[in-house]
Image (cartoon, rainbow, N blue to C red; front, side, top):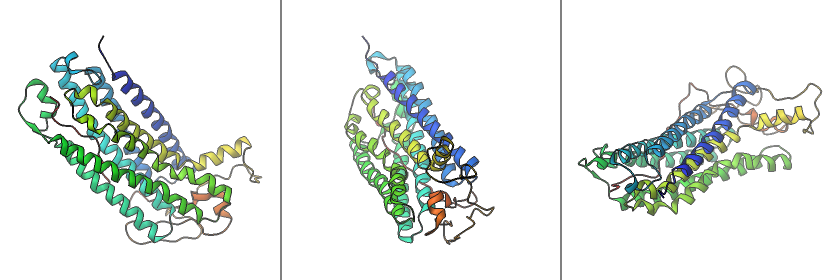
Length: 349
C-alpha cells in the first residue's frame, strides 16, 4: 500500500484558507460598510489573503503530483512538478506573512496614542522586515540555478545551500518571529487598560486585540519538525513543515481580521437584544470619520510616517464605540514594507 500524506495536507490547507477567507470578508464588510474607513492595514491583509490562496492552490496542485508521497512511489516527472509547486509555496508563504505582519502592525499603530508604544511597534515591524528579507532571499536563491531545486529530479546540474546553514537560519527566524508575535499580542493589554472604558469592556476587548500572538503557536510547533529538512525523502518527510506553515498563515489572517470585527459584534448584539446599552434609535454603529479621515472629536494629528487620531482619553464615546474612534491610515500614505519567510529547501536527493 502506498503511503500518502497528501490528503492530510490538502484537508488542512482547504480548512485554513476557507476560515481565513470568511474572516477577511467580514473585515472588509466592517471597514467599508459599517465604518466607511478602509485603510492600509486592510489592504495589506487582503494581499496576505491572496497570497494564502496562492499557497493553497500550489499546495493542492503539489499533492496531485506527489507531495506527501515517497520518492520511490513517484515518477521523475511527478517529482519535478511537485517540487516546483513546493518552491512556489515558499514564495507564497513569505508574501502572505509579509502582508499579515504589516497589517497587524499598522492596526496597532491606529489604536495607540503613546510615542513609546509607537517605537515598540516600529521596532518589531523593522525586525520582522529584516528577518523576512533574509528568509525570502534564502528561499528564492537556495539553489543555483534556481530551477535546480526542482530540476534535480530530472538530472539537472546545480547546487544548493548547505542544509545545516538553512536549519540554523530557520531556528533563528522562528525565535525572532515568536518574540515579535508575542509582543504584538501583549501590547494591546497595556493599550486597552489606559482607555476610559468599564473594566468588563476592557476584559472583553483585550483577548480580541491580542489575537496577533495566535500565529506564533504554529511557529513554535513547526520548530519541532525543522530537522526533517535533513532527509532523502523530501516530499514525504516535510509535510508537517508545510502543514504548520499553512496553519500559521491561516491563524495570522483570521486572528488579525477578527480583531477588527468589534463594530459588527456590537451591531449584532443590538439587533439581537444582547446589548445592555440604552438605545432609542436602534444600533449606534456608525463611522466616526469625516472626509479627511479624522474623527470629529479629540483630533490629534501626529507628524512622521503615520498620522492618526487617537481614541478619546475620556468621555462617553470611548464607552460607546471603543476603538472605532481611531482614524485609519489612509491609502495615500506610505508604510514600511515587512517581509517574512520560513521553511526553506535544499538538495532533496
